[in-house]
Length: 339
Image 1 (cartoon, helix red, strand yellow):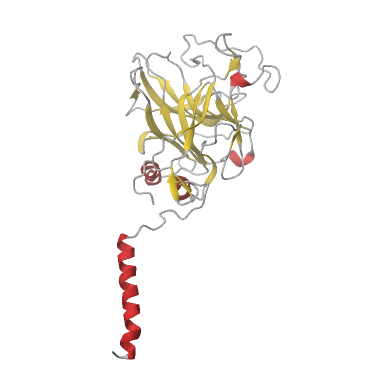
Image 2 (image 1 turned 45 degrees about the horizontal axis):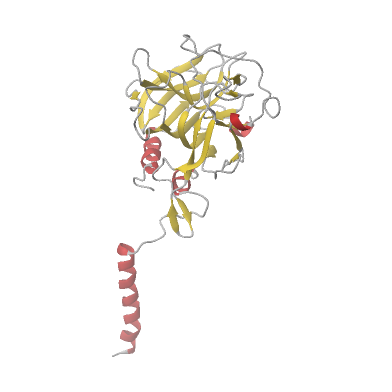
């Protein structure tokens, strides 16, 4: 055997082994490090326009909702653990659950459950080489409060997105259920929000709603018109998971609501004025309204329009993500084509 052949054999063998490994070996699929997630590391964080991101996967014994981009951390607020008159001195202020369709708000016990099973299938932690499902928060009258900071405020265009699981049922009263709200109401409407609204004359049917303040006395509103969702039977074990994204494109004055990766409704000639005073609430609505007292058998107080269910991976971008990006977020969050 010639010397040249002896030299080539290891090279050839190495190439063959490399080829088999290329097609059959399991490489580390995510070029990220703990504690970031696959969905976080591959879909959310690489987006250059992102300005805030709350995975909401903290452990059960924490009060801090960590934000991974600009350290605009929030606080988990459980009305049952806050003594009235101390940290949050709630005044005697109440908006009834009456017949006015603009102020329908249901009573809530103030439940806060952290460390709950993930609702985003493609969202997994890489820990010690293992892919481990993370967690999310589940609320019913509790919420996250993020103090106002200029880092949170998109000035011309924006996207607000979130993954949610709807846990209220047809037996619950018709009411607004806010996923996230960063609005100011007076002296002019500013900011934006995402919520669910009961569809009139259709018991158990809700539409997703996007809201934007344009600096006038009224808000611009978009309701999901193509796919209102029907609540599950009260006996159902768990609710339905939705991926929501509200986008506003400043140059074209276009407001768009996406549900589960698809454009659901769009409006043009809508202005947008940034909220320059009020905090962001996740899991409740109307941060500009003082928290109202509740009946003694429910709890000391609660915010308006409490969400009931799970919330995870809330993000804000300073651009209107396009339809391709929105669909990719939906697919990757479901574990489809995680690239």
